[in-house]
Image (cartoon, rainbow, N blue to C red; front, side):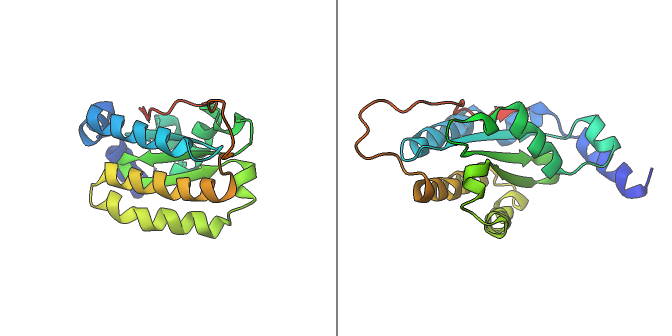
Length: 172
């Protein structure tokens, strides 16, 4: 195993779910959940947040990236399975202070990959500074703006909006 891989392995083994709960306590998770709910009232998309303290050992052994794990979680959490194919996963990996935005095909057709990367880069400063809640709020707001622009809620809709995915962040 290469030296960098050992270093990465140690970094990931030092983080666990208790650490995740320290950086995102219950009050912060409640605020993030409300932010997602408020956002989803303005568009027909779905936003799902997944925060993992570290990668599973199987990912570390094969030197998988945070992006690869985010794509897997996108599928496991069924973000790809929304009615309008416009779900977005906001994925945060605490051990590497990495954020990944994974959008379903309908929204991906509207937003260039470079734009997604620019959003991730802009939010990176908050995570590097340890401001995880603020970084996630910025992510929600950025995704909200894209969904409102491309999939706004029908202004004349009288029926309650179907909420296809949980609004509460998943902490692992």
